[in-house]
Image 1 (spheres, rainbow, N blue to C red):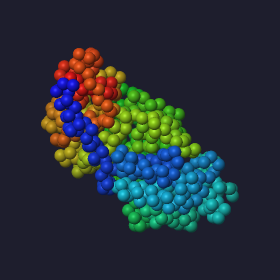
Image 2: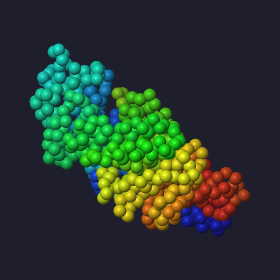
Image 3: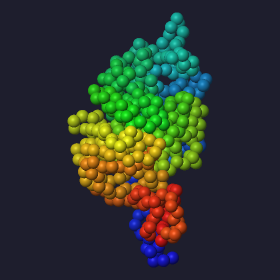
Image 4: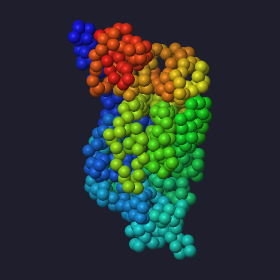
Length: 517
């Protein structure tokens, strides 16, 4: 081995290729994130591990912390009934599904999450219970009737509609909300089907502040309140679903025109202008993953699943990731039967993209999901020159700024963006190398800057000067001589495309690292 190779390998060992990942360093902070910088993870306890229990899931909470998760939303944990085993058909709202474990197990799960700086939200089902719920026999007066018969909401044959005209039912439901705060110290509720016409807005106006007086828990409502369920705009929810935006992305699928994305984003921002609550953005969840015809991320979005994930998690709002999305999101999970997630189906590109996006959400003020006002993050969409497939925008808060550049096209593109803040920027997310690991590279951007970006590629830049990090990976490094380098495209660790390496150094080709001597 010659001196150059020895020196290069020594540099690898002490210079940081296997050093601590800066993304991990950011995401692993045990401090509870501020409201504007949280990432939500939807977990089906029965699917998340082979055992399907609170205890088994608890043992893997540190993995979610490393991913960058701040809030674990647990899909319904109650005993199931109704005959088809839906988690949204509860038998008793003050018990746990025995296959998941006991209330004590849940309490231990929550305590461990709190130790790691994470919150736990429960899935709350206010509209109905299972047809064989305890209340059906003990409190039949809690249910809406028609012609003396209990009513199936939306013709769902496994559940009965609750009657919010009954004050005792209202008190009983509120007692259940209080129960989980007292018993397990939970931190929030994701509230199912809040757009139900049978739940009056006045219920939420009274109940949300009452529960928050006990503990300042978060209320997330399953509805696009800003666009559809507008009667609920002022009842006290902290977040709604940006449902129409996700539907727009699904309709875009594997499209290529940047102009369509620009319309979607402008609509999202306009719809969000006059609301007092935050918005949750996502590319999939349990409904999209199992109940729709196109279930997996590849079926929905094709090769756009990567750049559209970047868009959804940087353009606005609070990100939601569905369990299994970090390994590609290409498994349809039957939540009626708690299909086990196949954790062996690795997708390093998706995993490292998500990890980096969440580090950006945590570390960069401009990506706060607080409401946009004159004093809060502004989104600026650019008119891109030279390509109809490149979409670019900045998020800005004071001196903090993020630039996102996406190429939705099927071919490489060269695109010019005018009006950028000139000077020092740091490239935090680069689709050319992210499958191999995270990295961070200092660059200089000009006010009018031309970007060369590969098909379905993406870049995320942060304004300012940050410590650089070469591509971090635990994969082995191969040694080749310059004479062995074929005329394929190689990449430097900084992500620069190179036709043929002519100097000794460390390069990436076909997802593998090489020391060229």
